[in-house]
Length: 398
Image (cartoon, rainbow, N blue to C red; front, side, top):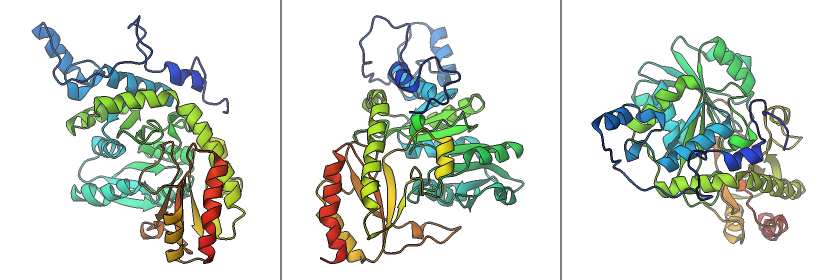
């Protein structure tokens, strides 16, 4: 891992991730924090009860919906690793997106959203936000200074996701942040692909960072969890919005988030290592037209990825050529180790047919003969390659 972004941190990332979130004043204690289940918090004095509920946005026990000791530990840990000011946990990644946008937007506002944003973000912009009188302009993911031509008098924020959903374009985040600050715009990024370890949003000037902790942070496909990290300016409004929307994660999900966080670094390194090995094999296959993975030197976004990111996760896409959809489906149905399912970030390998051409508005996506999204898990990469090799013959019509 590159020695980068360590200016204000006493320890390196791998050590910080083990220590982050723990309450040093609560000793002696077990290695792992207990699961806290509860709704009502009991008080002995009226003054204490009123004080705590008044400060419910300050990680103080007041009522179960506003957090427990487990919730606060998870939030402290994410804020520490993100190098942000504060974090708030939500019931899912979708809840994190909704709370972040509704916290800072009002009727009459306009936002700029990357055309490669996660489908939920797009649907929110076109649905709920539109119904509230908030308009959205989608911009090309690789846009540069031309984004200033899209800024209107009522533009409030720029929403980024790098790499992009399904098509994996890398955005020039430092440039977009610089331009946003010149125009007093808020910057929000969906940082789920890279996580807090492989991209440091606040080092790069972002105001609000979103993650679906359901994916790599939990890492075992057995919990629903989201998290929002902010700078100091937006801490209160983000936490207030999450609370008002009733977006409180369950106690078991929080526990699994804390537990998953401790092994995130070693898991991400393995996901990355396995992904590189599978990609090297895919590059030799005549049925593969293009590999969509920014960490590959021949990727159009490689130079920016190399400059801004510390590593790459196990999620990427491929486009196919010279094959039929029926053969693609037959191949997918016949795989043994790769399973099909929504979401990603767990220990298992997944593969999914996707149709980005139906989502893009600012450019035409070259469909060829199909697009696949692969998540490379923690299995032996040779076994994964053999599973693909055994079934890629189906694409030839054999």
